[in-house]
Image (tube, rainbow, N blue to C red; front, side, top):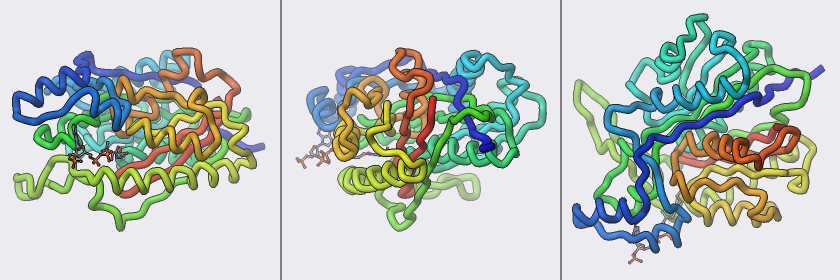
Length: 326
Ligand code: UT7
């Protein structure tokens, strides 16, 4: 009998400071940077985002999301035997945010804890790794988290990027099960596109060398994203022996409503079958998919037994999809 990994609880957390487009535009105007609610909504669908306070880290946001997910799962934190955190804004260079999170959650059972770095595809990567570890018997009950404080790496003098991103965290508890959970996954990367979305700086000899702020060629990312997401979706459905008609919910990475609409159109899905949070959260990178999933579950949209396709795409260039029964 196949051993599946099933999602048994979801959780999420947004830091309290919420900025509408008008709030952000007013702050940017003080720096002489011009933008508008109209431009941001028309090009991206974003209306607001949340920014963490300066002393709040990714593991702080993750902690809140994980507590919710663990409570929703009805398990004890001590029963978690694997922690994977997807983040591009870790608390420290090392140790991993996952190890820091393990301690904050009070989990003292010695379970493995590590980070996955695949930028906006990070959650899909982390979920896929946890699924593989559960299928092989290496883990029974995993906490898979996406957590970001992207506001820390934004260049607020670059209006083409700083209006797009936000902070937050989302988490799921995965459990080994005989009943279907994750059905199929696809992961990909093409490192030849490193330069189109990156934070090129690094720490060397006690200094930051290179630019530590986010750089993006938005149009290049847009074009690549639309093509690879469709292919990844179809390959994942094929692996599970399903078609697009079997999808109850598409939960794509929440970067831009236009990319999400294009992906849905190619899969012949109406936007009624797409969970959308980009308007309220902006692009929270690795946190965007679990934030949207938790929103879908808590709002009553995503129900037990339904078939859900998650899709991620981002820096690297990385992309992937995970198909599961809720
Ligand atoms: O999470 C990883 C995945 N990331 C993404 O998926 C991002 C993908 N890319 C995109 O979402 C879009 O390319 C953007 C939203 C980043 C940009 O939209 P666009 O339709 O590609 O706009 P553009 O870059 O062609 O810029 C159009 C105009 C330019 O002015 P000119 O040259 O036509 O005079 C920009 O200078 O819009 C201007 N512009 C702005 N205007 C007001 C750029 N940013 C802003 C801004 N406010 N914030």
